[in-house]
Image (cartoon, rainbow, N blue to C red; front, side):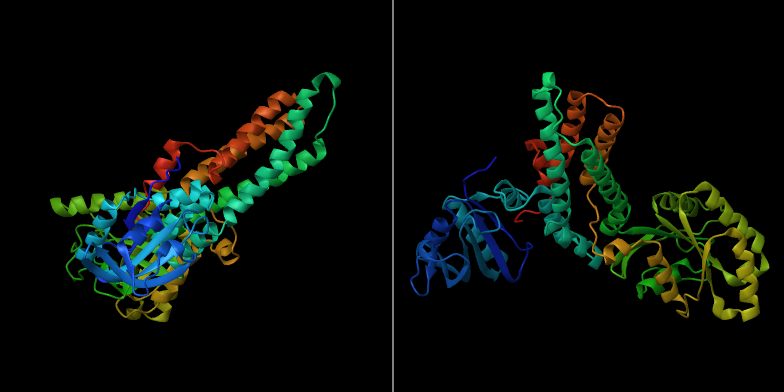
Length: 466
């Protein structure tokens, strides 16, 4: 799959800006760059050292297009492992297009999505899991997702997998060797050590698989549905969390007839809040549609905030408890947090009575006033407690990629088969088949085993220019 042709793309976001960077990579990249570059000191780019910067102009015959800085990276000491040129020009979209069109005429072709990183992988600069982490790093929008992407891009995850694969491969080689001497009945692989290795691999795989539950929500954000009866302060709470007037607030019940969504980063973790229509019996057709959407959003949410009016709860606590129980029974696997609003209008004794009644539900509770912004920080802290960030704080490997998760599950399944084979004295040739399958799934993660279709699917999701 390695092409020697030179590719070009805009490496910075499209549109006008202060500067733009145009990247060229390929065997002729420096020669092509040199053909359009006129150094202010008459330098020949092909004769310059790697990792150097040069000031000059991009010229099209006698026409000067822009004053630029050109970075020279000679393979294999470049991102792609090939000769690479980066042209830093002024950010005018006209200038960008003029330079790219000139380079195309000089022999470059437009890069495909993710082709620079694909070349880095094919040239051995990155393994496949590190290459995928590049895309995660580009799209990271909070501290936690950035931290995980950086850890994986530096090889934390792939190093852990590669070490296990190497140890397993050594034992696989010994077992394969035994097959060559089957008639002599010779054992080269120490079964006790092999069993200990399988236990260690099983432990690591289970830890990595379990980490996906945290990694997936960190990468994609945690959807939180704010539900409750009309006019209990759901929109006010959303506005208080976001610290802006995002949702319309009114004393008229049923104001919110559609869902309103917005995101907030709390403690480095992304939360996606969904303000829903109030749940009640209604003959209003439009409001009914909104209430139907509310239940759809509860289905999609990982966490449900059930908001209630403390004043109304005092008058009719039974109705609220029945409604919470309905949601609890309908969505037994959902995390539900009860938030009691408008506490600024109650006495301490009234609040204590409400606490005692809510304790019968055996659900976490928060008391606040969204309008007065009392207790909003307590709610944010409680939301963070729903995410197990211990592994993140300890800088442990966290799996965020669905493809990696799937390969880990399949590898664990094969390891368990090998363990069972050892325990039941399965013949070496059958056990070797299961070991090969486990090695295959390890290799799928790091790219030691791959195919064109897999690479096409992975790199199609990259931005052009990366």
